[in-house]
Length: 129
Picture 1 (spheres, rainbow, N blue to C red):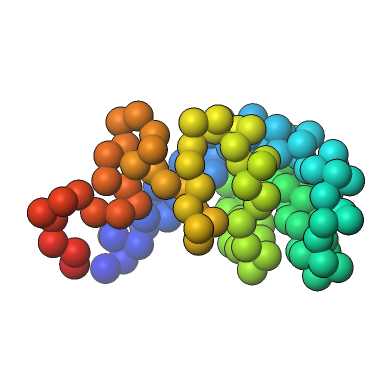
Picture 2: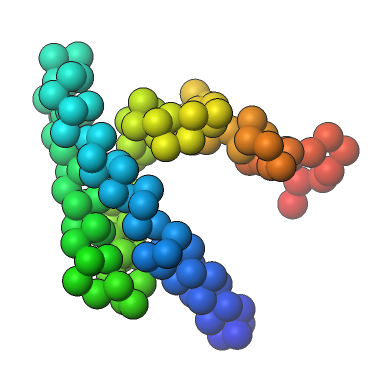
């Protein structure tokens, strides 16, 4: 069990490494202020504050990558903390991945991406575990 947890931890550290996440994080940080300004009147106070918190977390992640590029623990902690505020705005995600379709649940429909058939749903005929 410990070997499995160590393996998962290593995979997560690679996924949140500066090499993988810096550019998308920077793009989100660049897009968020304009999106917040454009959408403030369309959002409830709670939604606006929630998105504002997300923006702050993205800024903290960018700062962590800039100050400690080899430390993947802090960005991973920030991502986990940010989950309480839900998904980032669909419009910002679509700017990062123009061909990506977002489902009603706010999650990306990976089946719409080339080379990603059946995700996050299951392929026909594959039993669900």
